[in-house]
Amino acid sequence: MNNSENKTVIITGAAMGLGLAAAKELAFRGTNLALVDYNEKSLEEARKEIAKQFPDIKTIVVIADVSKEEDVKNYVDETLKAFGRIDGLYNNAGIEGKQASITDYDVNIFKKVIDINLMGVFYGMRYVLPVMQSQNYGRIVNVASVGGLRGVMNQTPYVASKHAVSGMTKNAALEYARYGITANAIAPGAILTPMVAEAFKQVNPADPKKAEREYAQFNPTKRLGLPEEVAKVVAFLLSDDASYVNGQTIAIDGGQSNTYGFV
Ligand SMILES: NC(=O)c1ccc[n+]([C@@H]2O[C@H](COP(=O)([O-])OP(=O)(O)OC[C@H]3O[C@@H](n4cnc5c(N)ncnc54)[C@H](O)[C@@H]3O)[C@@H](O)[C@H]2O)c1
Image (cartoon, rainbow, N blue to C red; front, side, top):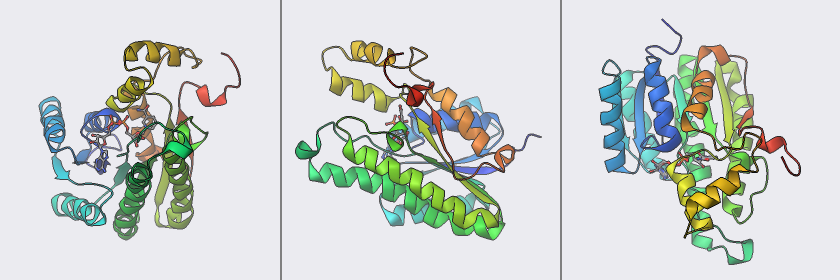
């Protein structure tokens, strides 16, 4: 038995992209899953896909908007009802917002990005931590971004929210390690998910694939990352093997965040 088997992990934003890839990686390792998303149709498709590939894994789905505190409380309650414990939280749901400079940024979209990316991650920890504390065990992985380490042109609320995720992760790590809980964040670079495909459409509506090729040239690997490559790091951080990794924000970006100038 590997140490992810028969554990229970909550994944927010599980319907597609990084969340779905992590769900499959964890299911492969024998972990039972609470799949959370606000996109009901895609979440149901994700559940069916996982059930087909991994028939022995127990899953529940919970429709929730992570920016609503009562929805977050509910996904925690539903997970406890179904599984009796919560070993891990993959606090992944997030949005990019629109691309615009600070003076042009729509204030309501700014607030929405903060509500989902920052408050959503906070609520998740706020309601899961007491459960983990009572178990004297837990693993939290929050999703920041390279935009949580660096500035990104025309994405101020995204960058603000992701720096906040990295900061909140450090605090969770300090405050809860004494209860057997670790909290880490990941900082993915450009990973080929529906969110990134949408960003390339904004950059070059006529030819998004061209924008993607051009972007990849700035990466030392000369390619974008794959959701499966992120999922393996997440599964490690959610496992017992990562027991002394705490409070870190781990870049998964092909080395791009270390570059200065041309590569
Ligand atoms: N893909 C990348 O290159 C990349 C890079 C850095 C960080 N990230 C971060 O990774 C996370 C996942 O991104 P992705 O690329 O898989 O995006 P995605 O858009 O492909 O998938 C995000 C999922 O989250 C769900 N979601 C969004 N807002 C929600 C809300 N309020 N409540 C519940 N569910 C919600 C969506 O319905 C969707 O299923 C995000 O936090 C994103 O900022 C992604």
